[in-house]
Amino acid sequence: MPRSRLQRFWSGYGGYVLGFVSLVVIWHVAAVFVVGSVLFPPPVVVYRKAIVLIRNGVLFEHLSASIQRILAGFLAGSLLGIPIGLVMGSFRPARKVLEPYTEFLRFIPSVAMITVAVIWFGIGEASKIFLIIYTTIFIVILNTAAGVSAIAPNKIRAAEALGASRAQIFCHVALPATVPYILTGMRLAMANSFTTIVAAELIAANEGLGKMLWDGRMFMLVDDIFVSLVTLGLLGFVVDRMFRWSIYAFAGKYSPAT
Amino acid sequence: MALVSFHDVRKTYRSLQGVDYSAVEHFDLEIEAGEFFCLLGPSGCGKTTVLKMLAGFEAPSAGEILMDDRPVTGASRDRGVVFQGDDSLYGWLTAVENVEFGLRMRRVPRSERRRRALEFLDLVGLAGQADKYPSELSGGMKQRIQLARALVNEPKMLLMDEPFAALDAQTRALMQVELASIWQAARTTVLFITHDIDEAVTLGGRIGVMRAGPRSQVKGVVEVSLNGARSRTDDTFLRYYKQVYEMIRDEVATSIARSA
Image (cartoon, rainbow over the protein chains, first blue to last red):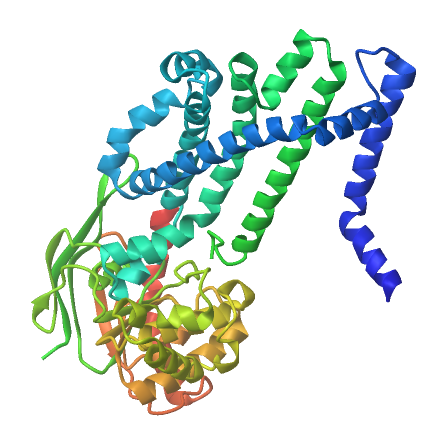
């Protein structure tokens, strides 16, 4: 029995384990044998530095600052974006009125908004949260609206013929049918939030993973830079897995096609 | 006194090229309460347009459609609909939750609506599949859910838009037999759209044969007096088949020539 469980683990996660191991090995080989410079530390050095930064609490301080900003902005952006997307997808006049906003603003990258955000909100939390909301909201709106317009007309018609009111159709048909699209939009928005938060913290912040990168450059702490980079990668990976898992958990039920 | 009557109905659509064409024009039809009416016609003859207008999904461009002497102005639970494809089912709800949908919208108490939904799932032969999601069920089972979902809502009339067209031949034949027996028990008025003569003769009390579109109308109505189980090898069955076939043959030829 334990053997078969092990086999199952390997068939499910073996590829991942192999992939991550090879990543670390290639990194090590490149750092030690190919580059051989203090500017490119091997995994062991970065690992030791990470332990130090975890023990003295510095890494956690930066990590939690970044996570809090991302979560606050991401949740606020999603909570604003979902209803706006639903309204845009459901009502043609609303779409016409709101489209100029979404179609204009979504082409201004959030990174380009950093200067304005800092001028308006200072270098504190407000400017970061504003930027993450800005990053999140348009992707969530567009995906939600696309999800609403992708609903099979017969789903709506069937509800009408079963006696549902417009409000009931909205709550019991349009909303659940759109859930997979909303989750996909949120997943993409989360990925973009990482880019934005690092860029914002690079330019103006007192703590955060981006600030850690900037300090590393200022004081030539190459190991710190690598700890920050690896943390970003791992954090993004974990968060994205969580999203993929929840989309998968819902997708069986909330499949848009059937 | 007919339950449903179409008076001089026209439905005009605009094509993507901006050309107007009428799917049906000067269309008249009466459906009596309690009858099983099959509307038969070649593809593109506008039979689904007729159903959509009666369902209230689309408004006629001219003329009027009356049900119980009142004009049809929109969809209502008086007219339950069974669609051809399975895209009308709610994939996030189980079979029994799909069937309950109409009752839930009317705020029928939970235990009451569950009991009735299970009753109708049983009627359509899906008693054991109540907790499955549509994606876990076969095409025939999904059409059964649609049928139960419409029937549990107690409509005055059932509109069926080629409900078995997408099923394989064996399942289709089985579903026809079961629908006939469900109808024998329920006696709801049915408008059944089909392009299949065999299906029309198997199910229909009256068969309305449509002309080739556009500007289609009912060419003629055949009354089928076959009682109980209808056998495809029965002489009377074959006679009706032949009669309907001869009516529709030229229309199919015209339809093919027009679309070529």
